[in-house]
Amino acid sequence: MGKWIMSAACLAMLCSCGERGDRVLFDGAEFRTSSKKVTKDHQEFEVTVRRASQTVQGAIEAAKYEATRYCVLTFGSSELEWADGATLDPASIELSSDVLALRGRCLG
Image (cartoon, rainbow, N blue to C red):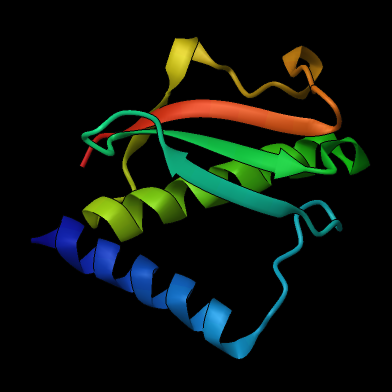
C-alpha cells in the first residue's frame, strides 16, 4: 500500500510541475529530454537528453528524472533499473552528437 501512496505522490508532483510551467534545472542547466518504449511491453525504455555537454552530471540527473517520470506515468511505480549495468558515472558517460542516451527497465 505504501508503494502506491508514494507513486501517487510522485505522479502528482510531476504533473503539477508541468501544469505550472516551472522549469526544472539540473546542476544549474535546463535540458530537453524524451523517453520512449523500446519493446512492445513498454517496460523497456530509452531516455535521451539533448545538449548534454552543458554539464554531464546535470544530464545524468535529467535522465534519471525522465526515466522515473516514464515509469511512474506508465506503470505507477518509480522503481527502475538501468540496462547494461550502467553506473551513471560522469567519467564513464559517452555522448553522441551532444546527446546522452540511456536504456532501462521499469520494475513496477
